[in-house]
Length: 265
Length: 265
Image 1 (cartoon, rainbow over the protein chains, first blue to last red):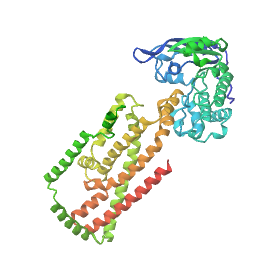
Image 2 (image 1 turned 120 degrees about the horizontal axis):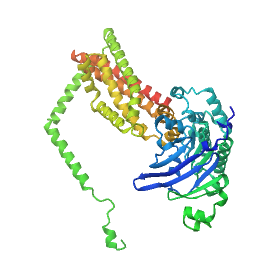
Image 3 (image 1 turned 90 degrees about the vertical axis):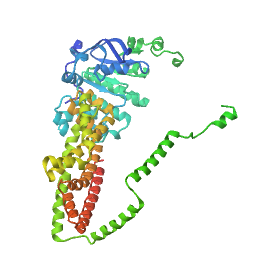
Image 4 (image 1 turned 120 degrees about the vertical axis):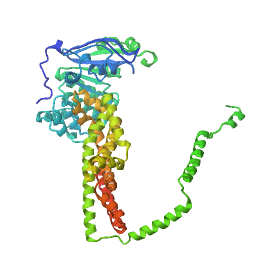
């Protein structure tokens, strides 16, 4: 099977969109990390979320697939309110969202191909995972994806033997293995060198573009956000303070997002 | 701090009075306890004499044909007790340990499992063996059950600790794929704890080999029972044969378990 084939035809944008309404998250009562965030993401293209550390970007992305439980608000994805889902329904919704992490979060002691196949765990029976009897179609696809991210020769190596950039490619392959309808990336380049960062962003942009699915990417690096995103969201102190295309992002916005002055010169 | 008088008053290692007092109190108590228990030098010297006579009666070890047959059947039973107890203990300790891990299972379940483990660990295998001998009667079954309980206590606790120390980001990434709980355990948790678990299991086999001789002394079957009978009959030469055989088995067990640990590293 061709890895670039989208799961469904690219039409039906409304169905694909992610709608977040009045999202609020407090880790400690009375100290919201996210204050009343509302956001709609269209059916395709990359949305970059920029902002200083500790401003709730990561919390926002993790609320979407419920790795973090929101305090209040709604997150509509494919006709479900993620906030209200639990148990099996939550798992079925999660498998439709791929996630890429800052520290790659590969299972270190598993092989590269096993890590990629982890992306199928939401689909296959437990005994198949236990015996590593994944359907042949999944295994073929995993090899295709590894080829596509340039790691075809590393399939049987253990994940902890890879470099940072290679690990992140495996992380992306794992996310794509889910045949996701949305890709979330939480600081995917923050642990990588500048050249690898560009390659990783390119990979995310290209693979999600081919599949016609949206990507939401938290990112520190404003230049990378400008270069790859179709839309930039600036967050500061738990609120959205900028939302627009990359061309519209001016220095005054950056000052508002990050505060201070001197660093821009 | 610029004044010389202030500098002169600084002390690099201030005396720790609570620790000194505690040490002095401990020394005093040891002296007192010795006097209460009638631990005198004269008794110690007299004991040496008895010991020497006892040891001299052990030589030469008895390798008579009928004794060797007794030794062989006792040893075989002990080995069976140790191996069955280890296998059953290993199989049961994995689920119990997972249940007891607070980062994986709901708190009430975790506490219930912890209470159970604590109960298993409260008593020495010999005491548990005495209880089982009373409950199910003399013989190998009692010894086996006692060692299963002991293995379960030890292994489950270590599994729970290993699970609580594992890297949560790796687990989080597998959770984000929408994996059902058991698949999450298989692909995200077990790869992280398995090497240590195998190490613990090998150690437990080693320790069960030793303890299988011990539980026999209180009626739990195996070589311990043979040893006890030999003592009762003052067959000290046969006692030596048994002791040598136990040492040999324990050493072989140690080599085996070290080899097993290296194999699975």
